[in-house]
Image (cartoon, rainbow over all chains, first blue to last red; front, side, top):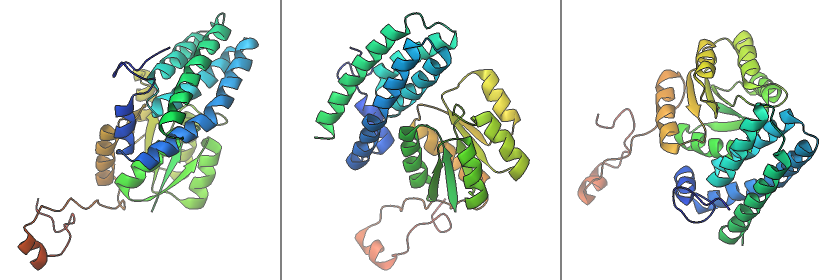
Length: 120
Length: 152
């Protein structure tokens, strides 16, 4: 499971998130809640696109999830999405379904962390 | 006074809305794609637009071209993950006011917003933080420090 590169612990860069929110705990909750509300449907789009080997749709969904992951400091998840995005941009979707499995697992880790830290 | 944030990603919009609202002290309105953005500009006449590039329906480049045709030099700050030099050059040639990379770094964006405030007439000038005052001085001089009356 990708850990956060800057802290070596947990799936999120808490320092980044705090810098963005100005240490506003309520805003952190709002942001992370938005992330877990929106992301499952993007992962579903990714899965459908990967199964149908639709490189354009894979690239677009991977780009979307990369953006929201990085916006909240889920850097490891963002990196997995970026890797898939780049491969899909080059038209390579041969292992896309496997990559989506990895992204879904990383997302589950991030979501669980968010629920424990902000939404419980 | 309004600022329009155009981004298809709701989490990114939240981040931008918060920082821009805090820093520019303007009302922040949102659009999820280029078509919606053009409609919001028509209806709400924002003072400045913050534009993502990669969006469904009408992407940032097409949206910017349309903005230039219909609203001339309306200030547009591009906020995107695309760092490729040819992309940056193309956007600058279309007259963007500034170009900021995602993921957004608050310090960087804040300094670019300060610069934007100086470039764009009509944006509120942010009050400078008041100089720490002795209790006696605070009682005799209660006026808040503003850009007009604060010491340089």
